[in-house]
Length: 314
Image 1 (cartoon, rainbow, N blue to C red):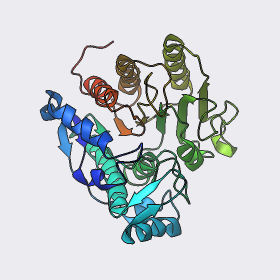
Image 2: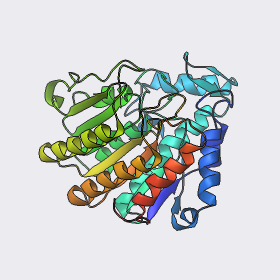
Image 3: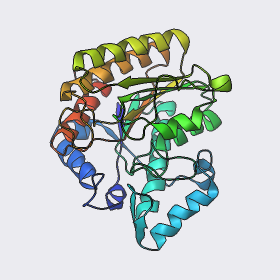
């Protein structure tokens, strides 16, 4: 069974006048309820991440600043990131919900899980918000898996159109976490060039595949599959995390890289096969971008159907 992390608190972060609005999760929730998937998923509990868990990735002063802004009614955390009065609560529940998903997979109560959470996280740095992101949910979960669940090697796959600079920063010198990002380039945040391959012991454990404007979807898919095969020859993970951005969809208003809805099923299928081969199918996928209100819920459904085995292998 596949687990689902969702809670109404995630709808209370931010503003409806912002691209990363509560509407994104509302349409996912409403669409899934209309499908057979909603009742076939195991709905996992959420809980707030502890200060200790957050501090594995973020500085205490920064964490406190997010709480303070929220307690004061919200405000502009940076040029792109807006906080509301409930943003701190939503952010710590998002991080905690992802941890719960990892715990459930390790306990065997679910085979894998999808976390429909917000605010997103892969741009969040140790000391600052960035690009709509507050706490780096995937990085926090990775640290939890290593510190508390005896998972040593972790593969993080980021297929959001925007490079996951915050996740890269968190593990740039760490040989136990392999970060693979395939993203539009040059685009925000301006990082993710091929030469950014890690440093120190982490060298060659950071693979960036910049995708340039005009790249056709067949090439994108072929390069993704080939890159995953090469990674499998160099690194054997005990767990796979996906920063699942759906803004590579062809008509996404914030991204758009030519992918069709069915392509997210194909990407997922390859990762599921990889996980089955290397780490007993252990996957937690975490929502990042995706701003086309009609296509986003359909893309998430395609992703979930493959995770849950409700569709044939592609």
